[in-house]
Length: 228
Image 1 (cartoon, rainbow, N blue to C red):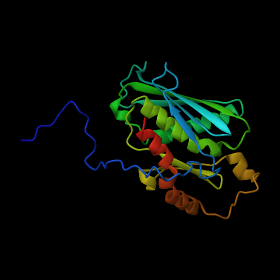
Image 2 (image 1 turned 180 degrees about the vertical axis):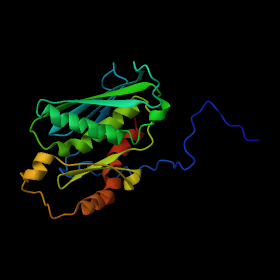
Image 3 (image 1 turned 180 degrees about the horizontal axis):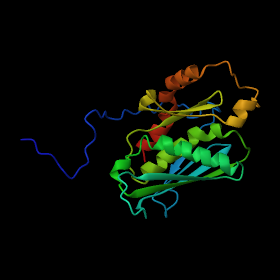
Image 4 (image 1 turned 90 degrees about the vertical axis):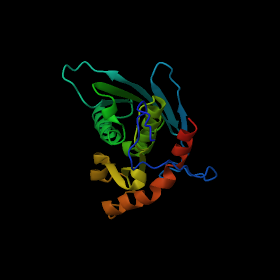
C-alpha cells in the first residue's frame, strides 16, 4: 500500500538528484579574471538571507528580505522579485537596467508560485576599488543572489551559473542547456573602448563556449552551497 506524505512538497517527476563535483578539483568561478571568489552566508542577522561574494578587487553584499506579504489589493498568484543595487561607482540608470536583468534571470529559478501575494526584496551593495565594466561583475552578482536566496530558505529549482566572455555575460540554467539571459555594456560595446574586445566572434560562438565551461565554473559555488 502506497501512502503519500501530503505534508511534504514533492518535486517534479523529472527531478534528478544533485551530484557534487570532486572537492579535489579547484577552479575559479571567475573565468575572466582568474580571481578566486570567496563566499559567506548568514552574515546579517536581521535579514532573511545574506551573502558576501568577494575577491581581491571587489566585495558584494547581498541581503534578502522575504517572502513577505504585499499591500496589493488584488490577488497575485506569484511572488514578485525586487532588486535594488547601490554603488557610488556606477550611474543609477545603468544599475536599474542591471537590476531588471537580474530579476528576469532569477525569475527562471525561484519557485514564485509557492509564495502567492508576496514579495522578495533583494538589496546589493558594491564595494570595489577600481571601477570596471558592469558585465564583469555579473557572475559574482548571480552567485551572491543564489546563495542569499538559499540562506533565506527560499525554494529554487536550479543553481544558475554565469560566465563573462568577450565583454558578454551569459547566464545559463539546467547545466548550460537553458539560456536565461545575455548582457553587454552598451557604451563599451558600441564605442569599442576596450582594446581586448573582438567583434569578429559571433554571439553564437560566445554562448557555445560558455555552455562548455559552465559546469566547471559552477563547481566552487556548488561546493559551498552543499556545506551551508
